[in-house]
Image (cartoon, rainbow, N blue to C red; front, side):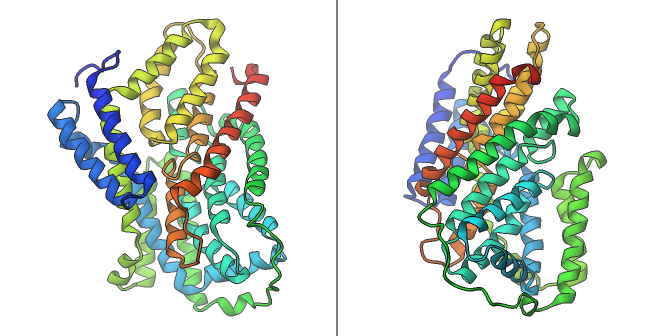
Length: 437
């Protein structure tokens, strides 16, 4: 493979222009986001091949098969839970606990998804909670939009706190030799502060939607269970998947493989009709991610992400600028993670940070800054994190008037949330900088 350029090149501008054009189509909704992503991917491959920085083989390699297969398997497992009435049961219980107070309900849901996302993949968490949230909204006769958005954003924040909560964290921990305990000790305090401020901000931004609901919930949750035996089998499968998710990095297994192991067990136990099961998979979301991975792969192969990393290297050469460099890593990684997938950026920046160590630079604070940045940046836009797209897809399919989350609706909340989160995290990082060294 050719050495990556250290200066801005024509290929970088070409790749950036193609990505920008595709994003204009995605955010403007002139075309459906999946159509826009597919068109952008085809153009990136064609132009990149002609220009010499991309190819069909590289495009296929850029697709994160682990993410695509994980989503596919979990969508199927969740589809087999739906007919049992288990989601309705949980929805009624949570609706009763909130006593009709939408604000209290949002806090309950946000806390649940955040805590679970610390130990279970945040995408899986949102796949499970999104349909429950829509059912609660139907029971209370409220708009599910603020709850779905809050769940996605706070699952991203919760996942940033632990080594296993987000894929980039696993990469960072592996490269830096950071174990689970050390990771949560350092990431826990800033993420806890960010979580509290984010919940308050979301409650404020959605204050017109979150009011005391007059409807009294007098439903019997036990009557919601349509097939208790099937629910027990489904819960067994989910429990098995969750346990394997905890152990997969020790066993050398991909999360997607773990999910498919659970799916195989569910297929044997439930024996669903294949056509009906595959019909419940959201293929549009999966195709969108394939297109997006190819577009971002072209941007990466053009050398632009590498160039961004080198600018951070130049800043870090001065030992007196460690704090400034750490903050720059945090903000740059967050802003890029809002528009491109955080995995290729993390893959690109890790060897650059490791290279700084050979210059005698203390790189430890950069690992924490990188983890914070890629964890919080995804909240800025609707395509910034996989969990965001799952929440949006659920909002579009639920059939409740005014529930569909548009790109503009997301950014109105996501951008303030992202910037406020970064400000809080930056303050904690700066005030306790010796703790992160």
